[in-house]
Length: 132
Image (cartoon, rainbow, N blue to C red; front, side, top):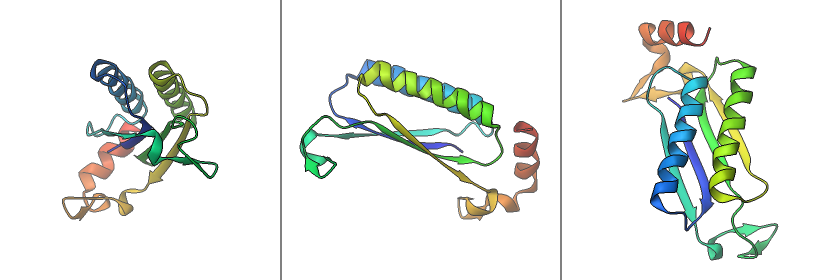
């Protein structure tokens, strides 16, 4: 279920992007192994489309990663995941002030194909087992 949005400056070549999303996927999947449906969206921003501290286009975009994840993994798994994601982004973009936001969701706050995940008892049991 993890869904991530990485906001970054434009200009990195496709091979480096492939390496980056693979590293982010691996880190997310290690912390959130169930189910194997991890989506990562790269959102590239040109210099003239980002304001930082009230100044438009004054400096390169500082990367931000926002991830919507299920509740239930451990704090140590989150720490390890965040270190790995930070390293992958830093290696790719070499920019300061990389920030990550984790939005944790219970199964009664997420729907797949119109049905609440909390209504799927097998899903609830499988996720509980995967994160314990």
